[in-house]
Length: 183
Image (tube, rainbow, N blue to C red; front, side):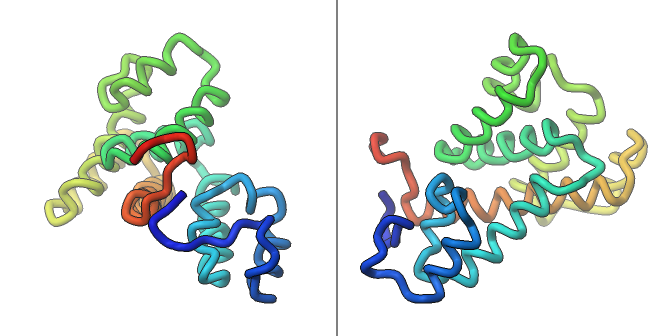
């Protein structure tokens, strides 16, 4: 359910040829990721959105897959985006080896006992980028470098935090919720 019209991969009656091609390219992801279906009225943007997500979250990065999911969840929690908190919380439960620590993180990401000093600093950076953008300075990057963040890691961290700020606003602003959840 959303506040705007969407066309699901199963609703072939209303699909433009461009959307048919986009859904074919997305494969099973088209029916699993409702955030993509939310963009079905603009197939080119939907495809580019997925490619950007894939490059940030699934391709090679100096940041671990687990830490990228931690950033996604933390930013979504900062923004109060239940839809993406649910999905990235579930992904974290699969990624986290110490199952007892994942619940601590899901409750309070920035103060979880499971965080290394480097992870905590990265999440603090993501929080500031999400909530105090006009107060960001070179010192924020220098603080990360002091904890052995490379510039590539800082870039990936900033891109992931920024991406989830964008997608949280899409989900919340256009009413993307689970079909069984009131909004």
